[in-house]
Image (cartoon, rainbow, N blue to C red; front, side, top):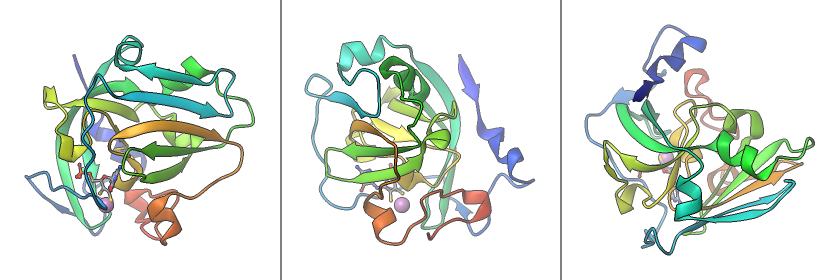
Length: 197
Ligand SMILES: Nc1nc2c(c(=O)[nH]1)N[C@H]1C(S)=C(S)[C@@H](COP(=O)(O)O)O[C@H]1N2
Ligand SMILES: [Mo]
């Protein structure tokens, strides 16, 4: 079953396409540098920081937590949006529950195999649309789009979605990620055009 979450824009206004964005049919690739080559067998995910039980999950343990498929839109801060992407993955919320997030955790820093990081307030991560995705349109997520596993955040600009994700660090104080240190927004709501921070 595919859950359609493309209507989430209605929380923020009447237009599905956020201001200043144009639609693209293709799926451009935006990577800051090298694109790591990681197999599902080599991959693991670490849940650390302000949690009851730090954990490292391998592929089997990760997928056993429960998988969902969602139809989502994808908004890049450089101006393009791709509608109706079908992503299959494990919800962030499921992973947070698995580790047991401390009550004083407020923020999240995602880590990736290319040393990319990105940060978001915890409440934005806990929305049901935040997935750690491993399939796109029914196929394994291509390496250039972050395979084996990436984060997707259809309610935020796409730089919040770490490709080749390796870790989720729960924080009691905000810490800035790669683009956030370079002037991009921490909150990054596309309908409010929060591009720069
Ligand atoms: N690990 C990692 N994740 C990343 C990036 C990156 O360079 N490295 N780029 C970000 C940016 S700026 C965008 S717009 C999206 C692009 O995803 P795509 O290449 O699948 O379109 O991934 C984000 N996640
Ligand atoms: Mo981006």
